[in-house]
Image 1 (cartoon, rainbow, N blue to C red):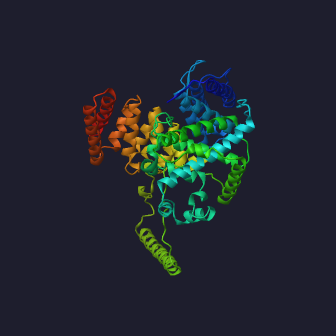
Image 2: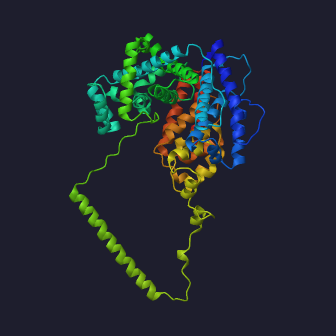
Length: 532
């Protein structure tokens, strides 16, 4: 994490804190919490949690703020992330790049909230000079960023035919056909959306295979523990900023400053790698563009965006291969329908026969068998109100999908998570990363009670990597993390892999007996002792 001691950067950061204090007063007033003045981000987070308890849950908070469940979760996550970077701040202190970016991102969330809730009137202006010049620079930066992504992919896949084949496997033939149709001749990348190009870089496998060496610079992409996750987040923010430019809307001061920081963080390591001869991708060359060429680029970008229906999808964590369904011929469909109909006739005949036997053998004076009574478990699922968990979620305005369950886990909303689990939704170990980092033991304990519904394949490599990296950054191996390791990572293959990692760390510590090597050995041994 690099420091940014310039007076301008410090002024931007302090302006962010002033905006947050002003906004917090209005937001809390809307949530029926009356305060005279706003304080630091941690205080704001505590007040939001108090509002949740007063109003009866996060659903009521979201309703007052005109946010959906996922948007509220994102809002609180960004505030929580900011308070981790800025537990307290005294004027005049040096400001790190990560602190400034975290503050700007949350101010961006405040801007989105103000658009959703017209009753909020706080200002998020920065009073930047030369706004027209800044808007032009932003358009140049977005163009340079997109062309840098193109160049990275083209150099990773110099054979265009192999690239097309690879994309067909990852995305399916139909999407590749659409890209080729929208794009320039023999240039599939020119037909792809920005989010799709970004996914080619930030996908877990693609990143580790082709691009991780370009982002090995320790001075950038450190907002989160994983540089790849930081890159993915920054690219998705750039997608949203780019969409605003495509819609011919002026960027806010917050977006301009964020884009400038993102461009530096993403292209900076690549530029340094180019200067040292480690890559032929030169981001600086894409910034040199005349007004005519820049206008032509954006006219073409708007045309393709309109043809594609807009770039509305987030930059995902990994590619999802298409599921191929076998197409039935008309004869197969007819036979399939006939089989269903004959099966239904047979089932009806069987039910009628069973009903006749039951009527003959049953005693009218005998009460119905208890076999028709509900089990205790079913009664617990339906609950006293007689509603099924899914119905109860619908009544709360929460859709039945994995994103809302993940959002509930991230904000420690055990009531909503319990309804999802009782309704039968499975969960993945990777969904608990944020809760583990913050220490939400309530929701983590609840998930452990439903461990049989954890259906992630091979979850332990990622989970152990996350745990060890957080320990390397000073976090403790908590009892909850130990419980999760014991519950899911005691399989022989995982134990053997961890034994190997521990042995390798021991060898490195012996070859280079310094504090860092010994620290890493202690971390690997601690994890191995838990799961073996």
